[in-house]
Length: 76
Length: 165
Image (tube, rainbow over all chains, first blue to last red; front, side, top):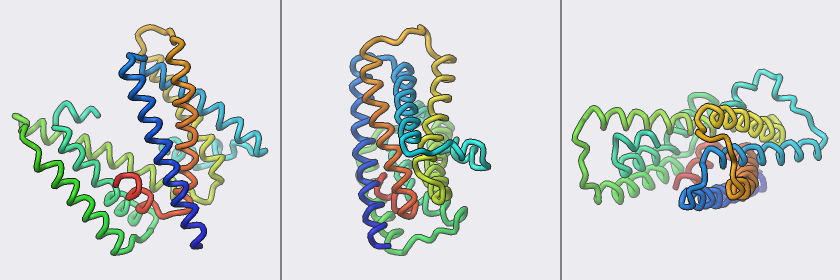
């Protein structure tokens, strides 16, 4: 259990670092007058493609998409 | 961010820093996850310090009280929705984090495509946008994956406290 806690904290810190780096990218985009909606579209497409590849690499399916949890995942 | 039209950024920051306390409250109400007294005390101290730092420098009063009220209300709705993601993430902890992340990214893509189609003025994406978008997407994927995994291993309020403070 203690090991899980430590791993959880490490993941949380990694998420924060990635979030800060992401904010820096948005800042660079804004200061260089890059279209924010375009950035959001390309970024989310890249995110989806990587997540899809990751899922396929792990031999998993989108089981959640048809389950009762769809609405909750959407909120996430 | 829309609330910034009505309230000073200092007030917005104070409301946003209520996030960990709201997550603790919502997670107790929804999934019966208890937060320890020490954690609550830490959150309260952090909130008090941030409020003190922000409000001591506050000198621009909004002229209209209704605007102030509306701005604070918008900020509260925003932080409540944001806090909800921590609790939902914790609620779905039995699902595999890779599947959750993939579903999350799929819906994120659908929503951003709809936003782009509705709000974009010229339907043309320039090269710098694509290059920055790739970096933004890769970092966003890492952030989402780590956030979901962390939420499955740690209580929602603890992750929120780490994120906000």
